[in-house]
Length: 312
Ligand code: UDP
Ligand code: MG
Image 1 (cartoon, helix red, strand yellow):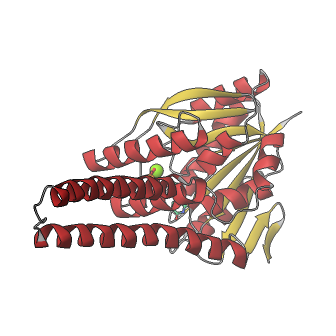
Image 2 (cartoon, rainbow, N blue to C red):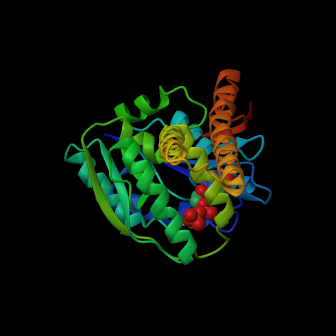
């Protein structure tokens, strides 16, 4: 019989871990699905690890991974995928904002032969207007880069073992799970779901941290900003060409071109365009630097599987 692994990244989720495990256990047992819950404690500062251990005592299907510090959700997902042993693996948030009923729908689709089942948000939950606009802009760029419609994409998805192995074979340190699962290809379908309200605890994302996250992922996944630099450079060059022709015409017409201010403005504009471009290029170089260092994506300090906790 096939087994479903569910990867649950958890950062400061002491209020949710027990509840989430209980709800998932009930739903999956009711549906008669063999399962494994892989909870990744992403260096929480509260009692998340103690809660994971408690859940492990109650249910032998719980696997716990404890990071030495906070490495971020992407790293937590990656560690969970590496530990998951199931024939099919799902990734969902540990706060029940991704409905367990949708998980069952995804499982049914996997049984029908689909290899990647993407959860697509039908509603976005409580978000500010700025947040929504930024998300729209970000996914626009990412969709262009991956060639796949990523609007309303989420980390909630189910993947066949083959797909998980393909994702794990990607060596880059800066991974963006949402785009990678689309990039690998395979027979894909989508399931719509309504983002539920968070019952307890709080969201870990501020608008600023999301903007930083978006920029990192754009750079990690696309060269769009570099194309932007090239286009901006070409536009500046065209403008200066027009200005040059205009000045020459004026000159041969017997009028000397005046314009101390124009000269200054043009100089300033070009100067700032060069600085901006250098900044963008520098950012890519910084990312290359991070990649060549080949540091691990995360450090696991403890693992809980079956009989008890093991130190790494
Ligand atoms: N998360 C994580 N590491 C982090 C931040 C978040 O593992 O550094 C987990 C978090 O515990 C939750 C999921 O990622 O299970 C989604 O986070 P959150 O609910 O804060 O995001 P939102 O639903 O508000 O987008
Ligand atoms: Mg959430």
